[in-house]
Length: 259
Image (cartoon, rainbow, N blue to C red; front, side):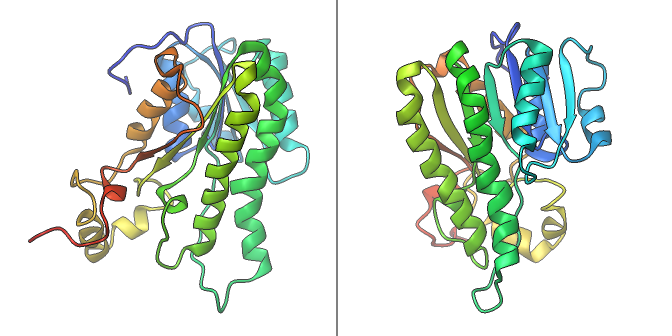
């Protein structure tokens, strides 16, 4: 089991994007373990099939989709509601990152980052909102601490995540009267397929750990546990929050740890 706590997700329906790997995969499995029915959305069908392996069709649905394609997000939401009958929790975990330097950064790179990190989140919220109003449900975006502070060589990625943070706050205001809660989790550096090569660099990992109060890099399961809590009744008075899950990284003013 991913979580220590037990949450009342039996009978609930969740949709998780980016569920084929990394944080999205851990979140999808965490909700499945807690009894939810889960639609997993991603680009690679084999990864999605692995994510829900062992769960019956009445509790798991794999939807292969490129969320940057017009209409794909709306179709994924429609398929989920058609299969399960409702929608209680939506987790926007799909995302991408790439380095950016202002002198060489081009429009194509900006389009790639924006289309999945921002545009697809807006499309998902738009498609899901009517269903979440019906269930007084939850919308949760996976943002990043890079959306709270600047990061070396990653200004464009940080800009997309900052946009997600303000998007979440605005949607929380707009949907709160309908009983829909909207929040974001802002992970720090997390072990994943995308970050593995950087963590293999011993010098980089040493510098990274110097900035993390808890002295270790996050695992995807660390993020999934917070997602379970934030979408649960125990967090019923939390909305419009951007919650850092970074081992204390953002607590620092930037000075190195004492030797």
